[in-house]
Each structure stands twice: as structure tokens, then as C-alpha cells.
Length: 168
Length: 452
Picture 1: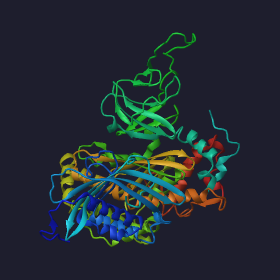
Picture 2: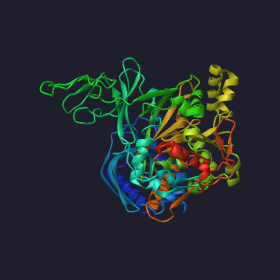
Picture 3: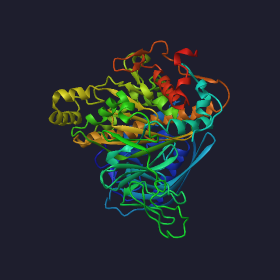
Picture 4: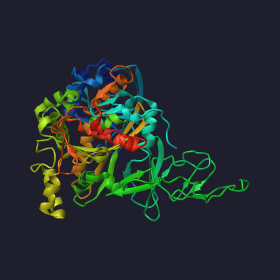
């Protein structure tokens, strides 16, 4: 899908708008509405969960997740499959977004948002706790706020982990 | 000291079935650590991880922490990461460079080959206290050997040489290295660390299993079949999408067109299962075209053709190594407890190949072999489910008999399954298992003489 010229209004968002979007995103994920979550991303979006603290690049070091929009669609399609055995039973998640702030950024056409998150994942009698820092690059497309880029810095990104199936 | 177990554990292995206790009994796990991990060659890392004198990295053999270090004379030393004084872990960093190791408790200091270098406050010890005593050291693992840069250690001073023990599997390690135009590979791109609540043997038993992808990986097969190739415009994602689709090849393909080969000491490899010319060294892909040019420049067209015609999927070196020579990925299996396993997955850069090849390796790892990947996560689920199921009484004997009647010798000196979905590679690992754990090999029942 092509972006229409001029569709991205060069508008900086205020912190309240950003926080609402992040809370909305967290709710969609908690409720398993992955298609609606996917729709928040622009067609050229990237979603990145590095495997190392301060990882400089997704190209030459492995990542827990590094998806473009097409791969994210594939991931979400798999999540919706009744035969995704790593989600049988399904995880239940609870996310808290906090410390939302806007980063200084030269790009006037978008807004870089930094936030802290806590994610509790419960599945099959086991509870896992994840936490860290998120960066969202948000833009306005046809009046709606969209995610053009998202990076999730997990506190324990380099720890031995069982599989990660539900996105952060 | 030999581990005491008051029964003949060899009775737990039959030609086409194994007892579930092999995956569940802590006493058998201890026996395996002592007799398999204590006398097999264990892969610990690659020489590219310690290029210069003083370079080191930490890893483990089973639960035993070790440090792998290059000495001033360039020799590779593998030391028990334990202070001779009070037993503390000496080296705490994952990797680094140093000219000595020093314990942070009382300052005992060691040479890079493990010998004690200095002890503060040496006065007052008993008369037989001698810092030159060789047991007062970070103890060196008895044998260290490299094959083309792959470092293995052996905790037993006796037994076959590394090369004899690897046997025909050297050709799989050759395939890892030969694919580099400059003839060198290097570990790069970080590491994935996966854990699961299941026995260490399950990992190698799954990795050459041609009968499971169609079922276990159904969710990613379906998702990828609905996905066009245009994942990541640099082509790196396309490869992984095609790989996921190929997991959905019909059973007839899995049965007849893949191939499973086994060799002595528990080793095996699964043939390549791609008929898709875009996956591996495809001629029409611009990156591969540049790669093949680089290969032909360095090695000539005949040798390049020979190398690229080696088509193996996973190669398993029993008991702790599995690698994909075509995709430059390598996993090391660490048994932590009878029901707890850690697997570390590394990537290699082919020296002299286009950098995009390495980016493809990284992307392939993320999407197929990674902790958050669309494929491996379902394998981890299987290991966890086996861990959950096997810990309860029920079916005592687990079946490893698929293809049992039709396995055949192979011209390479090993044996192969008539069908690629044969569990011959599991039976082959248990044949090695028997050889390791049996206190007296002569007592070991011939596999053919016991009925399943």
C-alpha cells in the first residue's frame, strides 16, 4: 500500500495524545485484538525487540523480534491460528505503561515517545514478568495516530528465555 | 569417582523403544553428566571468539562453569572456572581480554593456562602448602582439540582423538567452513539463549525429525502460505518465509526427498529439504550471484560447485552440538537438570562473502531459530509438553521405532533411513548412549538381541 503524498501531517503530538495511544495499544494486546493492533502500524513500520542491551543495529546482530509490516502481518496471522501450539493454552497478559515522555528529535513530521512498561504474562501455571523501555515513533495519518517504528528494550533481553510468542 | 546406580541402566534401552525414566530420573541424569559429558568430546566454542592472546569467554560443560582462553603462546586453554582456594567463580564476565585471572575473594591469581601465579599472605599455611602443586590451580580440562576452528574438550584423558571420534561428521564441519570464500568463518551477531523444562536429549531428537514440521509448525506454515515473498525488501525475510512454507511440504516429500544419515558415536545429519532454488545459493539472486563470484574467484568453479552441492540441513554431533552449515547457524546444548535445558544459538559470518549474506543469516535466525521466532517457539512448546507428560507414570516405553525394519548401510560408512522420516538417528544416539553409560561395554546387550 502506497502512502498518499501529503498524508502524513507534519504535526508534533503532545504527551497526552501519545499516552492515550500507548494505553490503547497495550489494551489491544492484552485483549488479544492482534489485527486491530497491527492496524496501528504504518505500511513501512518496523517493530524491533533487540537481543542485547544498547544494540546498535538489527541487521548484524540477532533480535528477539525484528519485523517489517509484512512479517508482522505473518506473525499476527500465526497468532490467530487455532493450531498455534505455543499458544495452547493462550497467554493472559497485563501491561502497565508509565513515565511517558517525548524525546528531543530533529524530525518535525513525527514524534518520538519514550515510555516504561511492565508486562505480566501468565500461561500454564507460570507467570513471567517483563519490563523495560519502549520507544514509539508516532505520526499522524489521515487524522489518526500511527506507529511508524517501535523499539522494545527488554531489561532481560539477553537472559535465557523460554519462547516469546505474544508481542510486547 | 564413578556414579553409583544399583541397577543395569542398559536395560532401559531397547532397539525400538526407550524407557521414559531416561528423561525423568535425576539419578540417570547424573550418570549422563558423568559418563557422557565426562568422556565424549564436548563442543565449547569457536576459535574466532578468542582471536588474540588473552581473549577469553565463559561457558559451561553441563553445570560446570569453564573459561576458554587463548594463552600467550596462542594455545587454547580450557579451565574449570573455580578458585582453588575457596571454590569461588573466578571469571565473572561473559568474555574479555586479560593477562591473568584473579579471584575477587582473596586475590589468588592464575596464569592463563590455569597455574597458580600468586597467593597473597602466603605465610601461615601448613608445611605441605605449595603454590606449585598442580592441583592448586584453575584446573585445566584434560584434553582440548580443534577441528578447523571448532573447539572441543574432553574431560577424560583417554579415548579416541577428536578427529577419529567425529569420523564422517568432519564433512559437515568442513561444509561450515568451505562455504566461506576466504576459507574462514567467525562467530558474530550475538546469541539466542533458549530454555525449556525438559530433558537435554529431546533437543537433538527433534532437530533431525522430518515427521514433525508438517504438524508442529502448522501455524507458521499456514501464515507463510498466505504471505507473499515481499517480506523485507533486501530479500532476507523472503528466505525465511519460503522456509516456513517448505515446512508444509507433503508427507510424500518428507518421506522420499530429504534423507537421514547416521554415523558412529551418535552423530547424524538430515538432508536439505528445499527444492526451492531461492533458498540456498540460488543463481538468480543478486546476493548469491556476488557470493558465487567471490567463491569462484577464490576456489575455482569446480570446487565451488562441489561445495554448493553439499546439501545438509541439520548436522548433529552427539551429545551437545547441532548446526546448519547452509545457514551458518550453530546451537550448543547445555543440560542443566534432568528436566531443564539451555540451548545457545550462534551465527557465523563467512569471510569474503557479501555482507548481505550475513544479514540474511541474522534474519533467518530471528524468524526461524530465535527466541521470538515463528518456528522455534513451537518446538520449545513440544519440549515443555514432553517434560510435562513424561514426568507422570503411564506409557513406560517410548517409541523410537519408525523405520526400524528398513534402515540400511550407507556408502559413507554410516547407516541411513530408507525413508527420511526414519527415527534411525534417535536409535543411533541411544546406541552411543549405551556405549557411554554401560560400566562394562562387554556386558552391553547387542542391539539386535533384545526384542522391543
